[in-house]
Image (cartoon, rainbow, N blue to C red; front, side, top):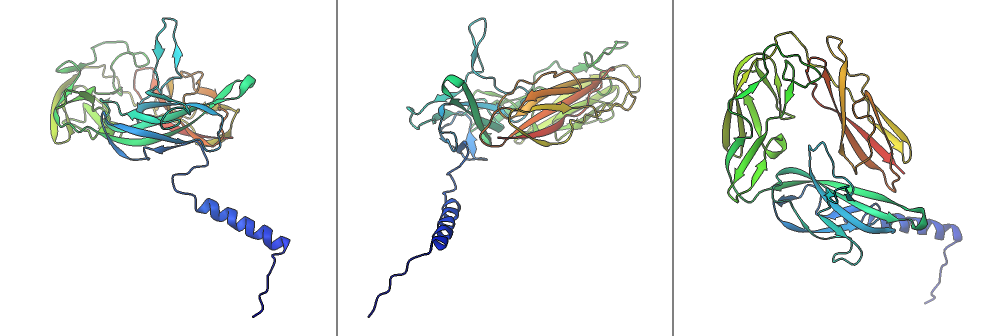
Length: 354
């Protein structure tokens, strides 16, 4: 029998290499990432309050990472964690719950404790510090959503406010939300008492709380946001329900009766920008039905913290950070009219690309 050895032509060899390269990337394990990425805990994992998990990071395209800092914050938190820094008084602002380097076990990860008072949807933010030698440094980040459930049972719901809750004062001079008035939006400080002795905030609907008003001509419930809005004078009962428990709060409203429609916030369209670009957020399309001037409040609710300028102006701005992979930044806008009526929040997403 004659054996014949065949040799691939240069063209065939190049084509086969390309096919192998494609196959390699298609066959990468699901946990292996090309971008800086949190591998563990996995997105949408259900964790327990106070539980310790092992954080694992994939450096991806950022081999220059020298350390990774981990932070927890709530899904609806307006104020994101700050970079670790020392204030004039010597105190640390928002220290990371874990700071890890290549020497840690696991490298750039390790034991990560879920906050004991956490409940509902939480964000885990990992910030990788990248060394650039004499050129200084920069950072990269990844964040994921996780659900936190206390192992302890909810024993009671409380409202951290006066009882009954009295809103407004007759003949008051409302000015840009400084007093209670028709159309004003309020957050009800709702907390849960648990069998492990912890008190946890239940204000957000993402913790499982729902609200009901016995008279929506006095207080209207915006269920999705977990917000209450003053509609008229009178009395109502607010009922909060969570995990089979209920609590009620009597509310008395006595505000100026001058008709006033709440304004509508518009944070502008979502967009994609390049690293280093100056990004302008515009709320100019926000409007008030009576045509009154508006007071603006911008805040950041997703992404690693950026210095946001002019947060009380119609237009806010920031400089898009230098990144290796595209990342999402989300900003929230609330507007208030001169009489004190508030809008529901409006959001805008900015994708930053390298």
